[in-house]
Length: 273
Image (cartoon, rainbow, N blue to C red):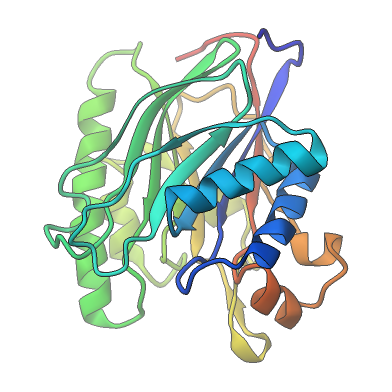
């Protein structure tokens, strides 16, 4: 299959699968994803491959949206093995999907990042999808520093000195708040290589819905600085799925997810690594 579009939509969303996902909630999540209709979706907190297949099946049967998927199960020792996965439309190539060693901060009970090579039309990039350690305490931040250092070094090595190295898309649940978790962002940036679009473009907005109406910007979306000219500047946005589904924040939080998706657009007619 060849793409006839000149742009592609790339999304990232935390499904809030910490306590499992009921079939009813999964069906509503499929409805939400159908409204985004992205070409490529990174999903965080996927309890199992079976849940991913159910979501894939629901998107196809109820909304006519066909997706392939890539799934790499987290280490069996992970205390709560929530997984990271991707859904992508036919015609997109996803290869070499694997977990990044050491990106759990050297703690086998924590999750590792998912990496893969992706090609959409003429646009190719290296995906790094993350679900970093949660928590606001100093120990939580220190563990994220360890995770971010490993991922940042990986990005630095990946980019290297050449002018013809792959674009990098870094996305998922950072569990980091811009302006508060400064050391985390510093280590994750890969020697200043990454441009944290979500920190700059989405200031004063929220992606994570907490109890009692509070919210913050925990999720993140970044591209390799000065290299990824395929990104359509200003296109990164939070998809207001709660409003689109005619739900208040509290109901959305309980019935769908406590996170809102990120959506961004990229040109796919040429490769400008």
